[in-house]
Each structure stands twice: as structure tokens, then as C-alpha cells.
Length: 96
Image (cartoon, rainbow, N blue to C red; front, side, top):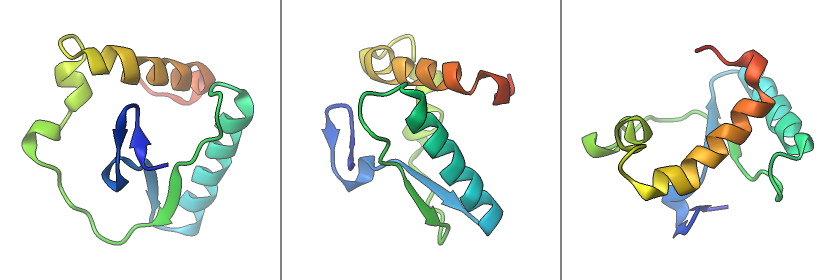
């Protein structure tokens, strides 16, 4: 918790924010399903919490992976393997 790769701090915590009970149940279901899939060595610690307020990130953070996936080693070493694992488990549910 509170980290993404080598980056540590509460700003690196992964979270799913829900607006209603149906979204909360779906998020918990998929988190459990992904955890049971064995795609990751450690348990998933993504926080599932009720939406309160949205804060837009600075412009250079917007679409970071899409804009940096071919030029930033962090994207290919840390982010891409996680996306590939996620896509493998949820392939039928993704829209491309």
C-alpha cells in the first residue's frame, strides 16, 4: 500500500472510488477475482472507497502512460507488465 514500484507515499496509493452500492459491489468482486487469479504474487491492496471530491492532476500527469509509454523506462518496466497481467485476466470484459 502507498507505493507504485519504487515510488512511495500516500500519493501513490491505488484506489477505486464508487458512487453507489452497485459500483462498490462490482469493484470488490473484481478485486477479489483478480486476487484469486494469481496474476500477482502479493495480495491486491487497492483501496475501495466512497467518492467524495475530485481533484484534477496537473497537465503533465494526464494520459501519462499513453504519452510516455515508448520513451519512459518506468512505463515499460513497471506499468506495462501490470497492464498485461490485468488484460490477461479481464480480456473478455475490456472494450478496445
